[in-house]
Amino acid sequence: MFRFLAITTLAAGLLTGCEYQEACNSKAKGYEAAKDAVSSSLKAPATAVYPDWNDDGVQILTYGECKFSILGFVDSQNGYGALIRSKFRVKVEYQKTKSDWVSSGLLIM
Image 1 (spheres, one colour):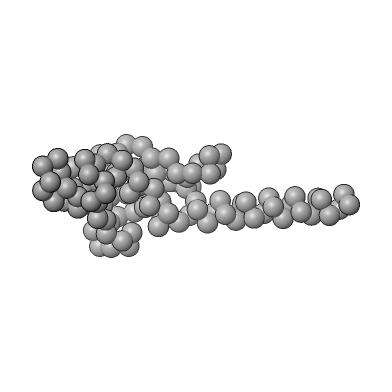
Image 2 (image 1 turned 90 degrees about the vertical axis):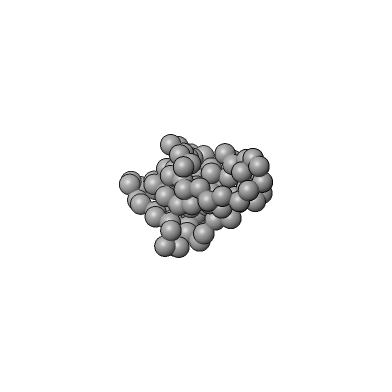
């Protein structure tokens, strides 16, 4: 019984580590976190249209383990209803303790 429990616990720990590495090293998931951060600051987030993470207008720079600096753009309506394109820069980091992405330094231009 103890051996089964130990093996099950070890397997669960390995799975969690794999999931962490998958999320941590994914530029696409980091970009999704950046989009969430940008959308939360828009006047009309439901109108936001972003390019794909690997589009020419998007730059994703790795600056540490699980850390990305993302430069991109979004098309969305402003407060008057006009569709405008805004550039943005944001840093995102995957935090294992929270099992989630955290953003900082958001700048929308």
